[in-house]
Picture 1: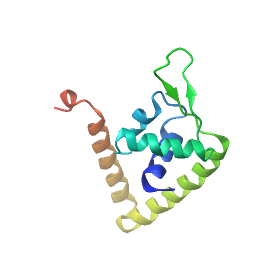
Picture 2 (picture 1 turned 45 degrees about the vertical axis):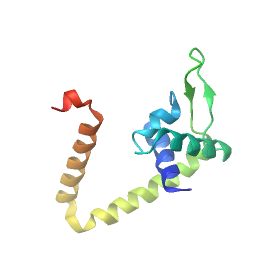
Picture 3 (picture 1 turned 135 degrees about the horizontal axis):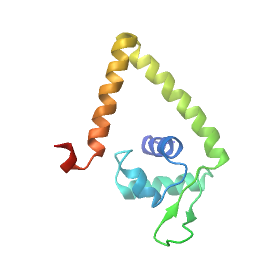
Picture 4 (picture 1 turned 90 degrees about the vertical axis):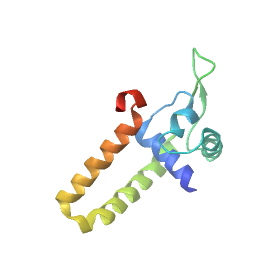
Length: 119
């Protein structure tokens, strides 16, 4: 699984159980262009990790729920990510690591806010 596909899949697992306009919803959190995410989603569909389902009432929207096979893969990816985080933060100690995570979370939140609200 490639870097962008791994990030997209982690976003599917962690952030969204189903997505409207799946590629558009995933493009921002994985910091990838929407066409790239669309291709990665196509690959994940082909591997049976997610499904594409037309929205019941809005033909413009596509839902991309994760499959049981995708859930199993995601569990392994999440554990690997947590282990990596522990290793990366270990040199900082518990308090400084928590502070770093708080600062990073705040930076992410600020990036998500519309520019007008961030000022």
